Image 1 (tube, rainbow, N blue to C red):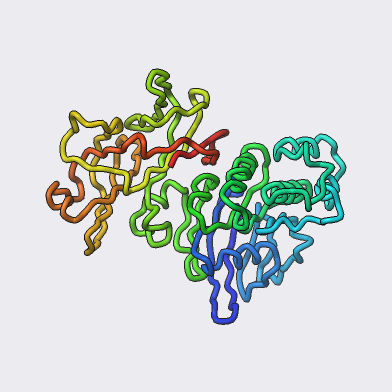
Image 2: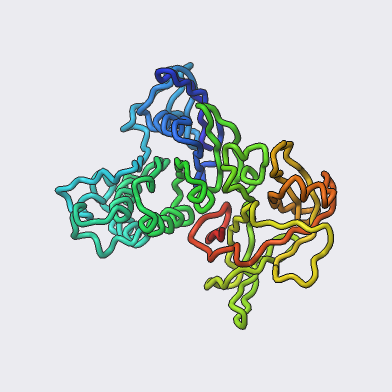
Length: 373
């Protein structure tokens, strides 16, 4: 496990963060700028000494104030990827990759080069690389040092949209290819949904919640932290069919199937789907004569206590054995007209065109996953 329980005073800012996350896959620290995410990562790395607490990775204690343990950064065996690649400008890509490598294992080197798509860049210098290429080299250099944990502090923040799309698949690929846990810092929910297995919500120096991405993004009470406008549920599905005539694909989940624009992937591929609350329409009866292809019977399990014109509802559209959460945002007038209350049966409708083509992403316990949102 990754164990963090630290307290520190940084000027007027008080950090009191405590969470436990699996030492496998990608754990995302998510929160607004200034929430304390980087301070937590620096406490893990040994760049910040807490006033009190304990930090451990896979049973190796890195910091323990009571036992007076405080390993220096160079003894913690952690890889740190910053917003900028911080490569050595006078070294080639190959030289940067080999710098600090624990061993000269040609097989391991070739594997990382292939994993990160660096084969054509080895002879080039950092000044000749794009931002995304520099970050891939920085990740490769950190991995070749054989860290027990990889820390990534907003590694895409300095990149434009195109470069982000370039590097995201490579970060996602780390999960299945390497036995190195990753702590990923971000204030962009789309990155978190595409990459993370475990989500840690950071707010005001404290941990507001820890859990799976699906569980936390579906909680209405956490919407101030997960993003009100971008609010929506994350559903795990499996690609089960293709409709070549109409250019559609079918994604199965417990309780139903979703039709989405065609996905050029093999049947059986696990996919992570995000459905925005604003794209869900509710009906009190099974719909007929509509163009919307995705309609699911379910029930209302929670209604937000809002007093404004809009209201959020959490729905279960799965099975009794496997609940599947969906989030809908409607007007107070619609809520009253439909006479919806907690426990009410309801039909949820999602337009196929609201579900864009999948993009590379991640998922807990699957070898390959993508996200459509």
